[in-house]
Length: 478
Image 1 (cartoon, helix red, strand yellow):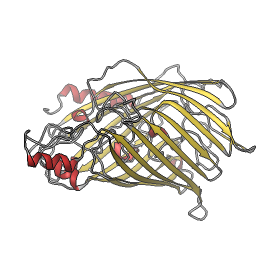
Image 2 (cartoon, one colour):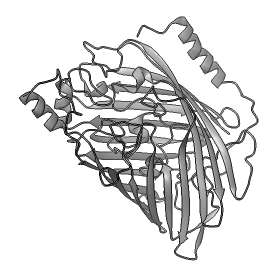
Image 3 (cartoon, rainbow, N blue to C red):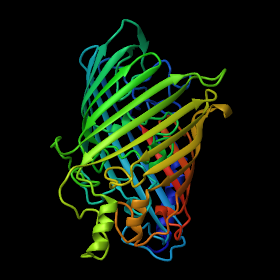
Image 4 (tube, rainbow, N blue to C red):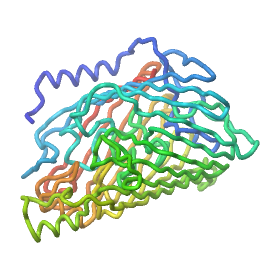
């Protein structure tokens, strides 16, 4: 793609100017914390802002109803970078820019003290750089990876949420679009059934989960090696059961897998395709005179019609009927991909905390639902602007490094294509990313942000890059 035209440069400057202006509107805001809010907040959660977050107008305090929404606009650009060759699934080496948008309407109805129903409607549009191809830790989590999908609004989440008390002690609970209850039993079972995003409940991290106000990279806001069950837009049908106690949570989910890698259609034949996910969440003090930290330990197993990188390569070498090995060239069969993950968060003060993730999967079967990462780890720091009198601002810096298995790398080096990667050949090296951001609370529910991502070895290819990606984001809560 040629360098950005003056018109495109002007569009970026206009968006930057708009981010600095107070925008007047008469809408309500979805609640959030100063650092990010988990689906249900217990009294062991990380410190939050002392006062409620600002809103466009005060949110209606209906006891049984919930109505809120958000809009997120992200505009990114990268200059030309070194690339002696490129393939069908490469990040375009010429300078380019792209913008995306996500609108979400959250609704909920609490019918009893223990039962509620939640429904969210979403609309997405725009594009990602190179249509989200060519890198494993892509720069914009809001991008839908199939630009041919309909732009019509769709139901993102549709859930039945049931509380089963196991004790008489109650704890306060912050109302969010995922839970409308003002108080909950300290010991309880929570059951959810319907359409949901597994990443809303598994691998959550207070400091690095929210692309609206925090980091924007796929491999930062989520564990890149967690190939969680989802369609192209990130949602699936699942049953989720959680057991909550004072200092720990255990959650398990059974979910549907897509019919093909990165597919929009889910496979309803659970005998052939399904996913098990289990996570243990532990709360406790690790550092003296510091708030309690959180450790989450994750495991998953996906059953689906997934190809085997080693078999694809060996079959092609023995009988090269196509120009390159093809991971989809295999009989219909159910194979298993499994993996493990861990993440931690440790508040250091009421405005600052440390966080990190580690992830690994077996790397022999194809990446199928999230992204092409087989090993990952990250470490970062994030917080709010309370230290300098801006408690609703957000700030963060993180380093993440991604890798793939030997079988996966050999498949790509011979010209094979994954659903994201494929430079035609590969000089393998780990994909390393540094991301920083600052989100400004401009006025009520208006949050403009500046971000910068620096990537070495895009798509695990030492022959290409590095790539630098400046970002403008405008987030509106209503």
